[in-house]
Length: 161
Image (tube, rainbow, N blue to C red; front, side, top):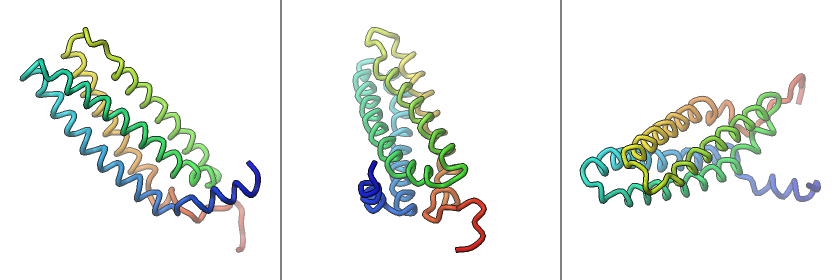
């Protein structure tokens, strides 16, 4: 990347508090969807096996929203982390690894065979949705804080301005 395009990218990047706010807003929406999905999954198959398709539609919608969220999070948060030495790049790599794992699990669930037992699908969805809710909580508590996602990067061994 040339110095000019790197400068352009930095000028278009929102400040840390805006990036954090946008991601937290998405987390709130995802939390609502996941909780609604868990409730739907737990009642849909037990009450009416014909509602299987609505659960599969919900799972696909959740996957699409998560894919967009993970891309947004990587565009907004990862550059801030990578600029924050010495721990930021490690945090960014950990976040990317978590995203990769989440996407694999979502893809597996979306590819769940239509001929399989609906109870297994509900159980897998419930387990994944609960894990994603835990991941969101962990991320908010341990990563998306003003002490970590910030604009004023710390320069190691700097003694004056």
